[in-house]
Length: 93
Ligand SMILES: [Zn+2]
Picture 1 (cartoon, rainbow, N blue to C red):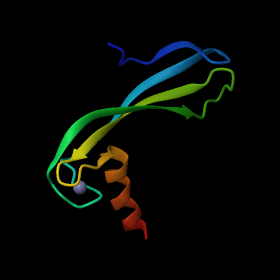
Picture 2 (picture 1 turned 180 degrees about the vertical axis):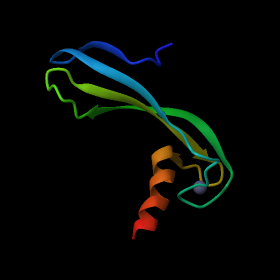
Picture 3 (picture 1 turned 120 degrees about the vertical axis):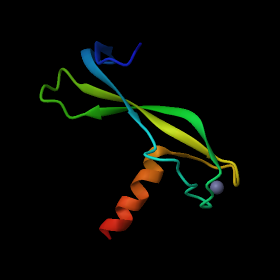
């Protein structure tokens, strides 16, 4: 329903563009704390990111929902970006 880009007032702005997005695990993740594969998906964590817009009076926000998982072994929760970014940084260095 609410998955389309939409324009609405936001804080001090008369209008702002909101773009929904989802960040999912590319595959079934392993726990970033203990390495266990026994994880279950645990909903999404919503966050709003400001995008750099050409017109400062008409900002763009990304409504990002991050896929969340819970480790059944150690009980920690982690998000899609955590599992995603760790290997990328490791490869660069
Ligand atoms: Zn764990």
